[in-house]
Length: 579
Image (cartoon, rainbow, N blue to C red):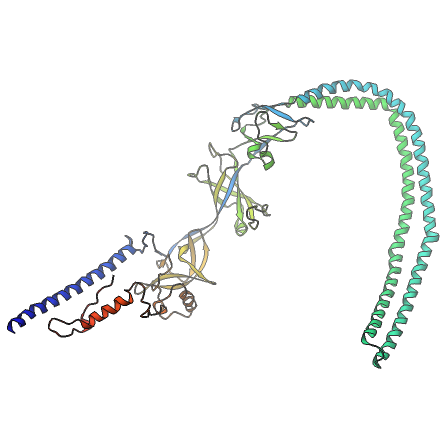
C-alpha cells in the first residue's frame, strides 16, 4: 500500500505537467496563427492588404480631381492637296510610272506619268475634223430653202390651234356650264325631298314600334335611312358650293389659259421661224464659230496630252489615294499599270507638319466638350510620347450608324495637334486621347473602388472598433477614372475600405436610421454570424470535425479521470484543437 501510494503521486504530477504543456502549446499555436493572419493582411506601412499584397485601405485626402473623357481617334492632316486625274477621255488611262508612296517631294518634282494611246489618236483626229468644217458651208445654204417652207407650215398650224381654243371656251360658256348648274340644283331638290320622306317614315315607324307592330331592327333601319338622307342633302349642298367656288372657276381659267397659250404659241412660232431664217442666212459666220469650237476641242486634247505627266504643285508627303481614301478608292491600288479614270484622285500631298486629330466621343459625354479644351494625345505608333492638342470644333450631328453596334452613337470632335510631330507620324494613324473637361480644386477624394451604390444611395466602409467595419453614407460629386469627390459624409484622413467586407467583418450593432435600409440590403450579400443557422447533429458546421468524431471526443472527455481516480471538471481540461 505504501509503495502504491508513493508511485501514484509522481504519476499524478506527470499528468498535470502533461496537461499544462498541452494547454500552453495550444495557446502558442493560436497566437501564432493570429499573428500570421494579421501579418499577411498588413503591409509595411500598416495598411491592410490581401493575399496578393493588394492594398485594401486608403485614406480620404484633399486634392484636385481632374474630370476627363477618354476616347479613341485618328490623325488627319490639316492641309491636304488632292492630285486628281484631269484627263476626261473615253479611254481609261493607266499609270506608266509613279513616285513611291511616302516620298517627300518639293514643288515641281515628278509625281506620275499616264499612258493613254486613245487620247493621242483623238488629238490627231481633231485636227482633221477642223479642216472638214469648210465643207459644211454648202450644206447650210441648202438647208435655208427647206427651212423657209417648214416655217410657213408651222405658222398655219399655230393659227388653227388658237381658233379651236376659242371655240372650246364658247362651247363651255353656253352649253356645258349651264347644264352642270341645272344638274346640281336638281340633285339638291331631290335630296331635300328624300330627307322629308325619311323624316315622315321614321316618325310613323316610331308609332308602330311603340305599338309593337314593327321590330327594333326595322326602326333602326328607318333611322339609318334618315341619316343617309341628311348626308345626301349635305353632299348636294357641298357639290354646289364646290362647283361654284372651285370647279367653275378652274374650268373657266383653263379655257382662257388655253386661248392665251395658243395665242402666245402663234407669236413664238412666228418669232422662231424668223430667227431660224436669220440663223441660216448667217450660216457662214456660224461655220466660223463651229471651226472655232473644233479648234478649242483640239487644244483641250493637246492640254490633256500634256497632263499625262504630273508634277508636284506643293511640297509635302506623298500618300496614295488607295491608302488614305474611301472604301471605293481602296479597291483600286495605285501602282504601275493601274487604271485611272478621269476625275479620280491619284494621290494626296499632305503637310505632316500641321496635323489634326479626329476624336469620337460617346453621346453621353458630348455636352461636356467645348472648343479650347486641352487634349492629351498618344499615337499608337509612338506610345511613349504624349502630345498636347486643343479642341477646335465638335460636330452637331452623330456619326453614321456603327455596323457592329447599331445602338452606339458617337460624335466627332476635332482637335489641333502641336507643331511638327517629327518623323513617322502620318495621317490615318490610330491614337487614344484624354480630353480635360474641368478640375475640381481641393476636394475630398476617395478611390473610385471604395464607393458602393445601393439604389439611390452611396456609401463607403470605414473602420470601426474591434477590427470591424461599418457603412458610412456619403454624397458624391464629380469623378475621374480613379477618384470620386465626396461632398458630405467623410473627413480628410478617414480610412476607407477598398473591397467588400468579409463575412462577419461588418459591424451591425445599433445602425442609425439612415443606415438601416443599407444594413438590410447588405444582409443578403454579407450575412452576419446571427444569420448563419446553427449546425444540427446530422449537419456539422463547416470547418469542424465530422459528427462522429465530435461525439467520440465528447465521450472521451466525460470518461477522463485523473490518476487519483477523481473525475476532473470539464472546464479545467483544455479542448483538443481540431485540424
